[in-house]
Image (cartoon, rainbow, N blue to C red):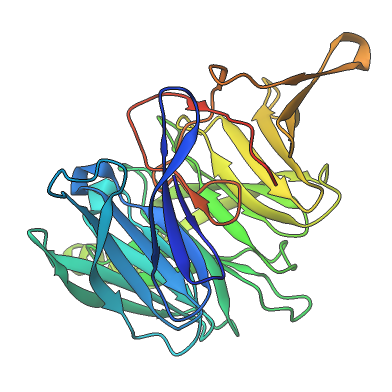
Length: 360
């Protein structure tokens, strides 16, 4: 597990056989507060990315030591991304099928996408896309996870201007050469703190969770046909033109959940995209699942002291402590951005995430 904080440092924690966490690395990463830390897919090695108030994002790789110290790991900076003109608020790796790419959001309202030119040389990165969000500042971004559906990038904003949508969706068109804005979610008008796509796993639509004043769950269904105003073009010309046009989408609000009764800060899906975890200012982690009628309900509540509160029969409730060996069906999604601010767990092949007792 990786943690970041306002003291400009990042710490790496390893889970021991006895169920305890041991800090194996602790180093200063930036010249300002570190807002986010995230892991790359293990296909690309032991890589993490960080972003900071100092207007930069950085890529770090764990290096193999000489074996003299088994207690500590060593992390080396491979590159810095310095194009932002404001605080970098989020950094996320792309799904593995898109290759080694990183997206950053910043206070200047620009989304930047970087791509590794040579995987054998992690210091070689190229700025391939610069997208203006039209926001005063961006807070977070998330890649859609499906290989089969159109690739979508969701971007949230902390802009406090009233009566304007705070989530914008972009689609990758023209054979991966251009990102086009397809929709603004005008139903979400409060500042957005986090958002994440669920894994599709056979669905014909995307599901997006958004953390704002309340928790929003949105479905995004692509149309079979792309929109085009050039109906009188020759068929070959029209086909080429349609490749540069975004699809039409059916966007629906599946749930507006207010159980936190306070600001929601982080959201994270399990590996199948069926259970959503959220954390808020109320000091609880809540787990959500959709039933057979597609209604979303809270299935478990975890207190900050490690107490698991579940609903019993007859509307009652029971409280018990989570044991070290107890697992919930909550695995890491493709980017593994977890529900506690400043935490990130690497993606593994394990289908379950073991919950430990965490102090708030």
